Image 1: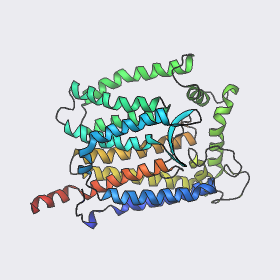
Image 2: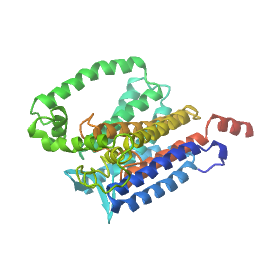
Image 3: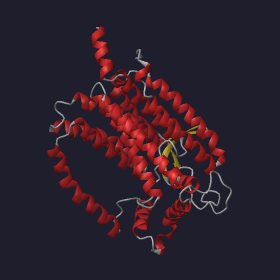
Image 4: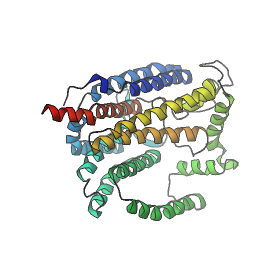
Length: 377
């Protein structure tokens, strides 16, 4: 379970990037809603402690329990279905006393671990019909449970994550090409049906968000687009250096309450307005550096499972960051995706830190470490 590692192999650079962006998150959440700053700080401290512990546990030992983790994940998502708390028309949370937990956030990390082991075990027969069908069925079960919450953004995130893991595991380019030839027309057809017909393919609020993004000038969708419009105005008003951290200007997006959910889904609007282009770009740079560190660690991993873990965690961070920032800047329909390590939310924060702990352990067991173990034997 625990091994002796060399301190020089510990990726302190990744830890530094995580501490910097989490620190910015605590500041921005405090500016957006002062009452939540202490909780956000607690979430960061808890996440760092959990990350440190997980980073010292042999990830190969953890993967021995991959089927147990998969079943526990399904049970956890089922618990949301039958015992979850409904918020804003969606049932995504489990309430334990005064504490609320969103299982889908942890589910993404569990699925990375499960498929890291499953795909490594099927590395030699990955491109066979049997393995691909079984893999799709295994990911379809949690996907359906996430979709019916309803949680379209995390459904898309998990589906994209699964595709990336298959690609990293060695999926044939012929199969990739065939899937793209089939999927592109299907996606186009799906979008046409959603936007041009009254078929109830999506939830009502999901369709309204897409339509308001496509037709912002339509008065029928004005209530759905105002949040994004105010977010763009706030980011633009920050100009190069921003209006100043935690300023008291009534015209600011958070002090004037012009953007709802600004401490979570639209935290990037606070960064753009108060810290300006330089601060907002700094957040993107830190997220980019975190993803690069994960990918570089994966390239030095001792086996395929380690590589899949690192690339899977990098995919979650990159995809959620991309979606959140695109929504805040009006480049995508509103999806309600938190900005990793910055937005308020302990479930997302701690889950991502668990993922980073796994990445750190993969880095501790790189190829040089493995060669040293062989020599000792």
